[in-house]
Length: 341
Ligand code: KG4
Ligand code: ZN
Image (cartoon, rainbow, N blue to C red; front, side, top):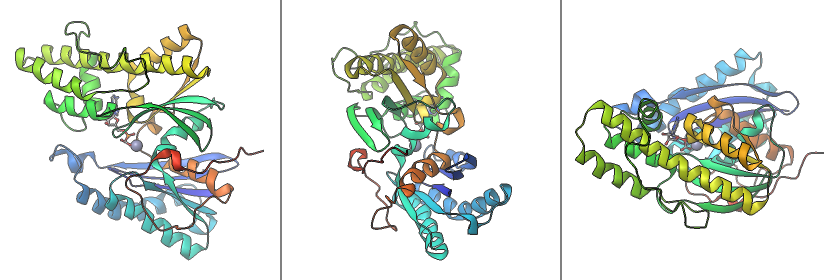
């Protein structure tokens, strides 16, 4: 069964071909970073228009690259939400039109479920159950994943998401959009112990997070010190260390609380090198295994949407209303996917 995946929730156009039997055939991502850079952030209307321009040619090129035509498709998966309404509508329209024209099923996929299941595209893939740390630009959540489609929220951020904190702090330090990767790169050159930044909710005893205070601390700090590059790098390193400290501590707590032996990390911040090093070390000393999606599948992509959608299409779980988007959407309302035997 060949499934086309389409991701247009924000500022990346992603397309992918996933085959139930042979796995991921290939995927393509077009990043709109250059388009939004001069505005210092994503401009929703520009994002939608760029998806309109890119999506069909990208699908066509991907099919040709893999020796397929639209007639070979057995199903289509698109990101239904959460995300920017206009951007989501582009993917939904193309997916629904193709599905109608080809008389094949279409499924609207939850973007976070895509991220959550993306480590299953790695080899070796983790077995269920596992704890998932979902760290993206919009979300920071710890989930207990019993099976595909069975998600229990263990804790989440009360304000900014980890990626959002990276982006806002990067902006404060005068780094170019997109801030997260730029800040991480600068932090590599800095001394993480020079400036001690707060670790919000580190000792709260629960699995919730709060990151908005960190950026205020960085703002105050950067007003106190001279604005040399060395200072900036040390602040960036101190900030990254604080975030990574909180994330890894709460992951260890979640592993203990659930008694599970596998931790899966997903979402854009999962690409962060320092976070990976700290989680790997925590796994070795805490006796749990840590899994990541392939680095190129950490940030938004069509492969994770094709994969998550294929699991639902295979079981006929395509929902009643194919043409719709859901810009705000909780993950726990999804119907479970029964394990494939
Ligand atoms: O999952 P994603 O691509 O999009 C959302 O669904 O939000 O995550 C994007 C977020 C951005 O906030 C970006 O700054 C952050 O992931 N990010 C990073 C790194 N790469 C991407 N944050 C820290 N270190 C990185 N290396
Ligand atoms: Zn995402």
